[in-house]
Amino acid sequence: MRASVDSNRCQGHTLCAMIAPAAFELDDLDGRAAPVSEVVSIEQQRLVREAARSCPERAIHLADDPDTAADAPHTPDGGDHGGR
Ligand code: SF4
Image (cartoon, rainbow, N blue to C red; front, side, top):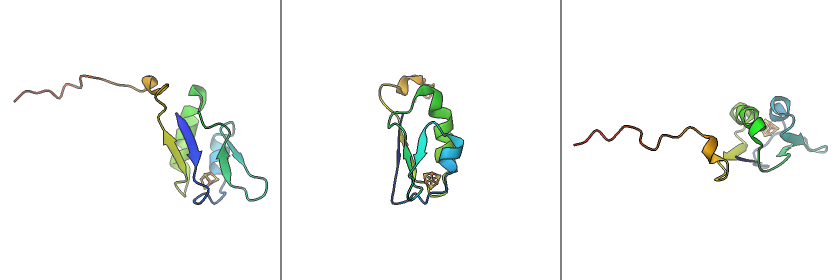
């Protein structure tokens, strides 16, 4: 998973850094957040998702990384082939 912060939206509420302090750092001058690393480690993904949900400005964008997407539950045959 990859994380980025839209600096135009971020208002420096610091919620993300409080929820996931290992994943987000705050600028000393304007308090805006940035991901510590663009690629989110498996261990940090739950907290980073929670931080993204909690951001009042919806400034945190997450994207599944093709290399780590395999950890998502996936059912190739979802059973919706009910036939016609
Ligand atoms: S919670 Fe959202 S608005 Fe607040 S610092 Fe983090 S990214 Fe910026």
